[in-house]
Length: 237
View (tube, one colour):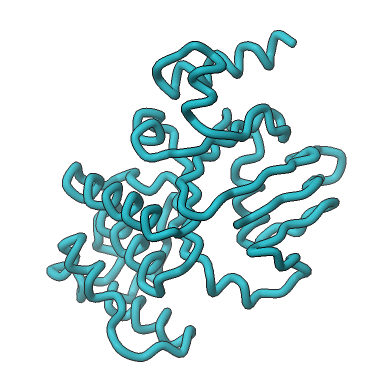
């Protein structure tokens, strides 16, 4: 489980996060939603250890993070846009990542097959389509069987077959007891996958809980409509 306690992040006088208190449970998919500038990216980067909180703290499985990096081995991260050295092939990138981890063997093979990435493996990344770079990014996120998976706009640029495959994998990881965090501007995608939702507005948590409870509270059937109603209520308060 991931817990944020009194988490705040300031950039000069600007608050990106304000008193964030949330828990992200194992065996569930948690969607992080909110308008642009709401703090979603800052929250994700704080969990990844790429941003140092101004106040508050984060724990992972009860261990408080104090600048250590070892816990990151537990995390598989798929960023919104995959950047790789332009002269390296996907095979080269996978080899480099495994070397950095000190991992032998080919843990990436099942995921390469799942995304039908084999024919693209030896092409320089500069000639790969955005979708194939996304597939390679997904393979890297999954290849070490991490306990925590963070997907940032994961289906952006993917063809329908690969998108469906990734959604299936996300559900399987959840069912295997992994902690899964998901962001997406495609609300129907979150409606399909998410068990819980964290709604941020201007750095504050306006809702954190089960998707079905949010729908019940707002009287809406769709997650998109429920979030829109929540946002309207927050703005009018």
